[in-house]
Length: 273
Image (cartoon, rainbow, N blue to C red):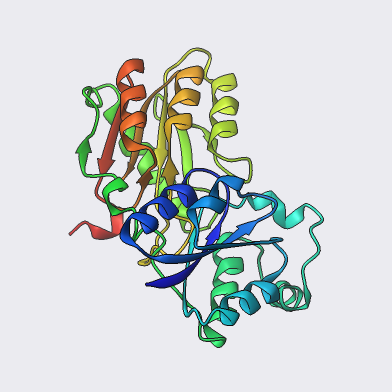
């Protein structure tokens, strides 16, 4: 199988390319210059480097190889939208007509442009299904009776916020929301929450957005997430089962076990009967 892969930052694109190679797929890696690691080059059948603003160039490269399927992997920091990167004419037209510069609007608009050219987006996790969180505790320690009320409250807050496309994570302590993730990302949100917690243990809640597809912007946690949780006094990572990628899963869970952090998956809100 041949397809194209947009590579943002982090381990997501690297792990996806490693799995594609094992399966014998030919992958055109489109590395975002501002985000992706050079590690993608030896893993891909072919690599092209583009700027985040080069939507037209992306389409040209994919069509030149006769590829009709594309997946989006890795994070693109939302602040890049405001970083002074110059969009090409195609992206500029798209940005001009957007009512809001949030993830759903921006990437949704890109998807529409790709579809016009016969390029279809695939589920971004289809190569990494074994890394999706499962329901229940995934670490030796389960969330305690003291932690569960914070998780219930935090999931209610995170699911409500997800409808506004603000962020995917919230930090909770004693049934109070200390911090909401915005453009700064989960790590910085946790550090901000720790400054407000006054030593109280923090619970990190991640919620998938209220959409039925998993084409882009899938919640992700990795070993680095656990390291920052340990640094900031967070004791629980609660995520949506089947909709959250746990990158380098074995290492993540080992670090969580060493730190006494509970990692647990919960059925997404929209799947409850």
